[in-house]
Amino acid sequence: MQQRTIIEIRGAVPRFSNLRFKEPVNWVIKEDEHWAVIGPNGGGKSLLIDILSGKYALNEGVVTCKNESGDNQAVSSVVKSVAFKDIYSIVDTQNSYYQQRWNKGDEQDVPVVKDLIRNADPAWLDTLVEWIGISELLNKEVNLLSSGELRKFLIVRSLLSKPRILILDNPFIGLDAPSRIILNELLARLSEMDDLQIILVLSNPSDIPVMITHVLPVKGRCIYPPVSCTDFVQDSPFQEFLFPEAEVTGLDKLAKTSSDSDTFLNAAILRNIHIRYGQRTILKDLDWTVKRGEKWALLGANGSGKSTLLSLVCGDNPQAYANDITLFDRRRGTGESIWDIKKRIGYISPEMHLYYLKNVRCLDVVGSGFFDTVGLYRKCNGEQEAQALEWMKLFRVEHLRDVSFLNISSGEQRLVLLARVFVKNPDLLILDEPLHGLDVMNKKRVKKIIEEYCDSGKSLIYVTHYDHEIPSVVDKRLTLVKNR
Image (cartoon, rainbow, N blue to C red; front, side):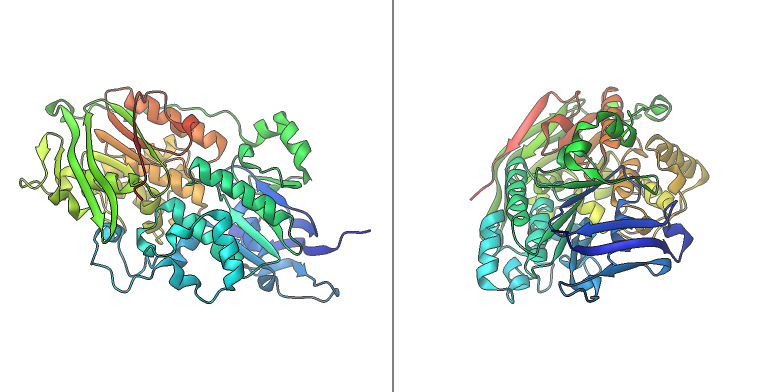
């Protein structure tokens, strides 16, 4: 029996030249097929999904979608797509600010999770909540969700409408190991359902689940011939072509010892830390010292308080003043300004990435690292701009210098934000899931940059849910346990 075609892209050429692939786009998705679109950062994966979803007007070609009777229907009625930027639809970043998550009482009418899904089919909602294990999140205020918790909720919310085709953009990033197992089990269950097909947009071959049947490789705005999942997984030379070995050159010219580096013994001392929001205790009786030059991995499940702890160190959380915290040998609340703290810290997190989704050129985003601003930009002088561009070259994103931050892929955005972290040569790096959304080769490159930079005596706090992503220079670990 011949498989029915669900969606077909035939000879598609977007109207605007900056949105085009090197050749007209062709792709046929038939019933019972589950796809992985895979390739490096900036290769065109998200652009392909946008063409499929009808986001861009076409100069040539067509995207067709037919129902069981063979009649045309709108693609939007069939496809549901979930990507990192969709967190915008949950967290109102337009009317809030980066530190608001930590400023309890500063928000206005923030909904709890269950308020956003109250109109769903109760039986289907209960099933999804059980399958992905988010029952404990239902009564939690949305702005208090961790990055991993937000992603799990996005997936559940997308499934409530029972789409014919569900597209998930890098769904595994930000999830702890148990949550990744649960998501794999969920995808396996969904793949067995009638009238539901799954398309995953991935940057790492190791993320391909066993339920995937077909792989569509994308690189350099070229779409390569589709192959079976089995053939792709076994074709190591082609995977190496998609993700060539990483190289790092030029770091020695940029990483310098700060003139202040020897003036402190401890980057951070936290004593008897206690953080509570309403009835929820996030951190309790925590003691932690990070000495100058030490390299730490900060570990723990989604929602265990890692980001909250880092917000105390970075000066973003007002509860720091109610706790015993010393930064760079100076006790918090003894007259230092937040800028005195931030000028010695290079910081990146999923939350920061969310609040950087602004229409600003990439070079200005990197340059904002000199001033420790999020969403507010000062003009760099000539020397600072040259320094920012050199760091962009190291991360291989210098070609994006004059491109709007909104017009690049999420993986490219992460590389730009990483360049911003290093631009001021900080004494302490606080990297909260820094490899989010990066492909295999960029993960290796960024990991090498971190290792070489920190080898010069810098201090490091590194957060990840993947043991193999922890830099080799890390020799200490702090694991947080989620409070119940």
